[in-house]
Each structure stands twice: as structure tokens, then as C-alpha cells.
Image (cartoon, rainbow, N blue to C red):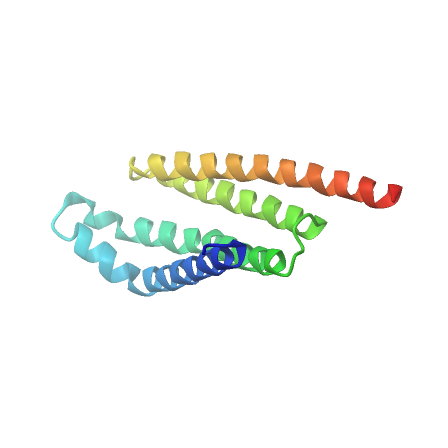
Length: 147
């Protein structure tokens, strides 16, 4: 039977997989970029692609670490706490940082616009969830004071 514990474990496994993929991307980025663009006019832009990838790895790594830690707190039963609100706030900012990095990269490769829009949209969704959780924390604090 599927339950919350299994769901959290699956989410943590997915985060670990994404962490491994992020490290692999960082390690193999030069080779991937070179092979992708070696026979095109874009080969002269390899340095820009690598810069975008490596700078983009920073908020991506911070986001994955924040997600992992947040799931750890939820697994312990600490759901509606200020630390989770702070983590969600940070996660939304990491999404927006990725959006800015991608938006700047549109200057040399227009398809980055899709990454920029997607990251900004995810940042907005996380921000709304953060506001909902913040309200729940406030309501829980009020309820704890009245008992």
C-alpha cells in the first residue's frame, strides 16, 4: 500500500538522481557542448554555453539540497514550521536565479528563453505554495496559543 513515507522516500531518491545528473552534467559539459555544436556555426559559442551551464549549476545544486533537507524535516513530522517556509522561499529564489541566468543567455542562443520561462513559472508556483504554507504556520501558531 502506498503511503506518505513511501512517497517521501521516492521523492528523496528522485532528488538524489537529479543530484547525480547535475554532477554528471558539470563533469561532462565540455564534451557534451563540443559534440553538440562541433559541426555548426554555434561552435564559437562553446564558452558561453559552458558559462551558462556552470553558473546554472549553482542555483540548481542549492535547490536540490534545500528540497532534500525540507523532505527530511517533513519525514520527521515537522511540516508547518517556519524553516520549511524559509526553504520554500529560497527554492523559489533559486528558480528565479535560473530564470535570470537563462534569460541573459538568450542573448547568444534564443532557445534558452524556454528554460527562462519554465524556471520563472516554477519559481512562481513555489512562491505561491510558500505563501500557503506560511499562512498554515501562522494559523497553527494561533491555534497552539489558544489551547
